[in-house]
Length: 256
Image (cartoon, rainbow, N blue to C red):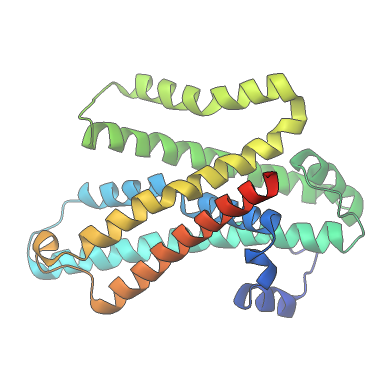
């Protein structure tokens, strides 16, 4: 971002006033849904809930409320940082490639090479590669931890750490290896976008139960969501479901 010097006003305008094409252009909607899935990731909702349970918290009302507040800050901070990283990638691509007249750059390997050429600084490509590596590691770690939580909490299946890591890593890597072996480098970008879209499609199955359960006074025992939180939660849940449904409709219409 430091090297490309994007227009801050245009960034703010694009963030606050989405283009109407977002809900009419299938490709734009596909990328947007992919970013949503990559930022939130439904399994992280289970992960954050489980992390709260691992803390030694007194059962008095004040301590529980303080713990909920800190957990909320933790989750919001994590999601905000993920949002900023994804936004920075979009801005970097727009400010570097499109502004320089290279809109054809769409793949990671192309971006890595062209960054140094256009900006005249090899460090830009190095930082880009490091960011991708860090992103991949973060995604793998959270996926492994979430898999452990789901296995232990939902199916009561407890296995040793090395077996769990082997199964989750193999499950994550095997499809990518198959796609690259069959389609080569050309299949990497569609696989990446497709996996992110699948994450977004699964969000509703985590968000709707989450909002519903945390809004039940009998279940939460005095710590249920307030009316404003319930309203915002249901609006977000319905918006996610509506965008995912719209994407499916536009995809089938485009293929018809």
